[in-house]
Each structure stands twice: as C-alpha cells, then as structure tokens.
Image (tube, rainbow, N blue to C red):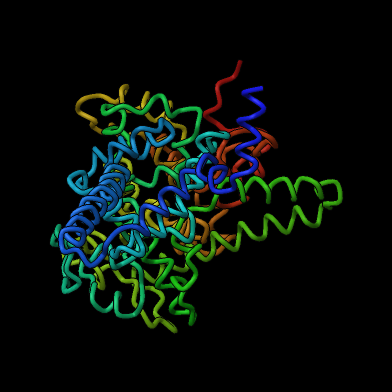
Length: 460
C-alpha cells in the first residue's frame, strides 16, 4: 500500500514528478551555462583562462601532429617508402624535410596536401601499390626550389654548364625538367622501386643506386626540350612531360593493346619498324645538329659550346680525315668516347633496370675500373649507338665507285686488324634470323660475293 500510495502522490503532484525526473547531461550543462552570471568580472576571467588553455591544447596538438607527419621519420614508417627514404638519406638534400620539396609553401597548401594524402593511408591499409609514383598533381614546383636556390644563376656549381636559370624560370620551365633525379636518382623511371625489391633497400644499396648520371641533369632532356622548342612547342606546359608515367596506366594500355593483338596484321608490324627507324633518324639528326653539321631552322642551338664551357669538341676530332681515321682511337679509348657518344645521354627516356642485377654489377666491378681495349665491344657499340651509326650507315667516300671498289678492296683487308675494321660496318657471313648478334648498319656482307669462302679459312 505504501508503494502504491507513493506512486499516487507523485501522480497527484506535477512539480514533484518534474523534480524527480532524470535530466540529461546536455540539458544539465545548458542549465549550468544559462545560470552563469556573465556580468561578474571573475567569471569573465575564468572564461578567458579556459579559452586560452583550450586553444593551446587544440592548436598545439594539431601543430604537433602536423610536425610529426611532416618529418622524414614519419615517411619512413611505411616500408613501401623504403626506396624513396633511403635514396633521400643518400642525397645532398638529406638535411631538409620531405615536405619542403613535396608541398608548396603556405598553410593552406599544407592542409590541402594532408587531406589529399589520406588516400595514401587507404592504400597502405587496403593494399600497397606495386610501384609508388609521383602523380601529375604533385610535381615539385619552382616555389619549393626557390626557397633555397637563387634563380640568378648562369653557371652550374660544376662550372661547366652555362644555363640561364632565370630565363628558363621566367619562361615557365619547371626546375624538375632538368633536376628530376637530384634526390631519388629517378628510381621510378628506372623501375627499381617496385614491391619485389623494397626489402633490398639499405643505406649501402642506396649509395650504389645513386649514380651521378641519374642525379645530374640529363643532356637528353635538354636536347629533347630544345628540339621541341625549335618545332614551335612548349612541352613543359604538359605536366605529364615532367613526371614518370604511372605504371598502372601503362599496364592498362598494354592490356588494351593485347586485347586487339589478334587483329594486328603484318602491315602493322612493318609500321612499327618504320616508327623505330624514324626515331633513330631523328636521334641522328639531333646529333648532327650538336656537332654543327646541321644548322638549318635551328632557334636554340644544340652545339656543345652553346651550353658547355669546358666540354668541347676535342682538337683531334677537327683534324682532316678524322672521320676515317678514328678507329684505332675508338678501340684504345672506348670508355672515353662513350662519355659523350652514348645514346642514353642524347635521349630523354630513362631505360628500365633490374635492381638486383645493378647491385651485383656494382659488387663485381673491379676496384680500378680500368678499360681494356676490346674490338668486339667497339664493333657492337658502333652498331647500336646512334651517334656512330649516323656515319657508319653511310658509304664512306674512300670506297670510291662500287665497280672500282669491288676489285680494289682486298688490299685494305689483308691483316686481322684491317679486317676487324671492315667488320665494324659489315658482317662476314650472312646474318641468320633469330640470332642475338647485333645487326650491321649495312646489309652488304662479305659472304654475298665470297660464296666459296676465303683464302684464310681453315680447312677441316
């Protein structure tokens, strides 16, 4: 009865019922807030103190988080970044943070980049990409470089290259057009930062990967850009021209081509050969411009003296008859010849490499690294090198008329050394299909006429 009576009393007294009703946390806080006497000076000082402490906690904590995520240590915390981090530590830029290059200056840019980078967290959790690449929207800008470097430079640190940096920058040419490999040695373009080899990246291996030819400006990049300018183009306007292609996009293109492979015809195969031939011809034309043999319709000269102070055409090359007399020099000093006459320096594209092979070659290389004269190497180099084949594919003037040369050339090939010089441009026997032998620049081979053999053939 007492319980029922208590309940009855509560139902009778509405005020008692309201007072005993449980009030929520939000409502209690709201009542507390409304009951504050804002006219009291002490209350105002309390509010100011609480606001100050809250601001310090919020902004200080946020700044701490930003600082931590901006540090190279944070970047190295994900193992998929091992190639990028180890090459960074082995570079001359290892005393600055990653964000000083990869995020444009400014707080807004910083926050925007952090929001966009949330996708990297998603990739890390759901599945690490086979190869990490710099996207077109994240290319290093000139603003980043100019935080430390002056654009008022006409000569590079080596004292050799003459480059009007200010003129290039004011024209809108990005710094990474030439300096793309200064920190990471173009490991993306070389294809050696893939998922399979990330565990091989250590401080020691990174030193082997950081080769000067990939860190320094590539002459082929300058030549390719100048050639396009001479044709009325501004290639740097397309960001895709500056950054390596995304492997995923390349694979999609390959798959798309493979799906239509069944419809390809022989004519299309011949067209591919024509494209390769056109590419080689273009490379040779550029080389001829560089050595001053082709100066027609040239706005930006590609002659060596245009950009180089120290590197010039050697005096020996200017001696009369050098074109037909440099064979002996090529055999004895091939390593010096390829310092200039190497295709990889005359084209923009970076060849793909295999990291494990690269590391083994570095370990196997002799301490002296001295070149030993090798006629076979010279022959192969002259056949695959566009610089050499630019001349070797043409009939030498010393061969006079064909009908005269056929009866007079035997005296030119009596010794083994003389014959070796002939074999630079000519094959001795008929080339066989499917062999790995490097094709000669001319289709004329000795066996075509000497079908019964040669006098010095050993009879068995």
